[in-house]
Length: 134
Ligand SMILES: [Zn+2]
Image (cartoon, rainbow, N blue to C red; front, side, top):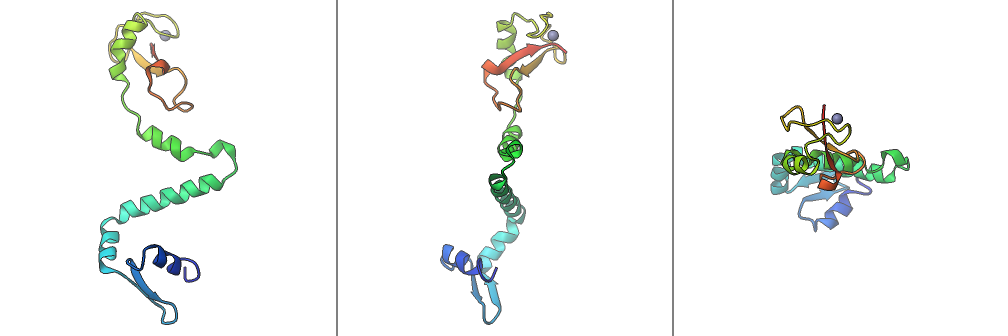
């Protein structure tokens, strides 16, 4: 911290976040910064962890685990596919895409499925949606 962080961050923040003196072992946060950090501690920790994980992910050379954070973020944004049901029932003539069984359109009997699995293509575009029976 002393060698690489205090001085660099002090310069980056134009001395507004804290004061420090290495020889006197002195470090003091600006009271407004201290209050901000206390009020948003959870958010700051999550943000810091996210950026550290993204950096580690970028440095990691194992291809299968690359871009996990992007996938996790996309999954978090998944929304209900129900709004597509009506148009899909019309387009597929109320038949299961996979087996052809007639679908009633009732909940728990008619499912909207990603043809290309969500884990490969994080898309709710209608070209990737089909109707399926149980
Ligand atoms: Zn079916």
